[in-house]
Length: 484
Image (cartoon, rainbow, N blue to C red):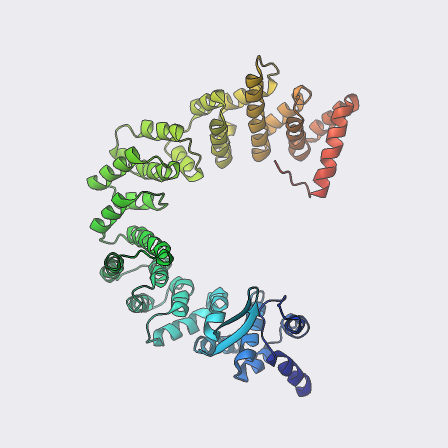
């Protein structure tokens, strides 16, 4: 590429920077589309490196944006190029100069390192780990958001020597009210535990305790901090349970103070399985809470502790019924504990209220093999689909809702035996919506003989033929996606 052409590109990019294609300024939109995008499309690494080497902050911003776009969809094999990219990352991290740019929200100002930190974290770890680790290792100021982002998203997700010590050093050097950064450090220890052994458990315990002490001493009331404080506390006890840290007193106090759903309660239950005080707190929470979402989390913890609780089956079933809980993960836990069987499903089907039908559908959707094994349930479905009489309007409406749920399940699970029943009962379905559900299951999942039988039915029933043709037309337009 000629030097004059390169110079024209540089001159054009110098006039302003916009990291998004549609900028509030027309000239920057034009620059993005006519200058920047072709560079990316050509994967012109050399010119992008040349732009970076000018050391001008605007050109560096364009350069790294271009590199990120290319690396997002390109594997880099040449060792020399990998080294050059890593050098570039390190230089961006050390570039505190201000960059003014136009984004979705208009004109913004920040440092180059802060502007590109998310893009650095997005890169493949084989490219980003070395410069990120080197940068964090040499960082000697109070930990800031660039460092915490690198630690959480890059450094802690790679097993390497000295990573644990580095996280500890930087985690101990956060500002008192940098709760979001502290939270990132806490989660980094969890990341590290997924990569290999975490060994400095005493030091991590001391760190977590110091964070909790700072929260308690600060007596935070400002709304802007409370959300981050809540998240930090929750993660400290979640990660503390995963790492099996010695935080018993603090954890029990936290659980005792809980008045809202906490998704990691079951993890804490695993850690404190043999702790009678924890069990007492959990059972007490169950008695006092009226929040179905919180009750759901408590029940998951109870299922962990079930061998310690004499009437655990009754507790689970009664609370799920009383609070009408439909929680997929709780349903899964109940199934693993053999609490969901044919009798329960048939009883709920007979009750037929909105919650019962929703619970049945979620239970079977999440464990489709059960319906294959449960002939009693299938027989009950078949019986309901065949029913055509109802004495009152309420009974008719209840029957319609049951049929609707069953037909949706047939579509969800693609049960061949029940698809045949759809055809057998098609003409007895009075509701147009139910007919559509039944026809869709036949068209989508039916064997060829069922399709032929459907075709024969449409020859005898003009209304059915019209419904089938309209449905096929709609499905063709929507790529055979069926929305119900």
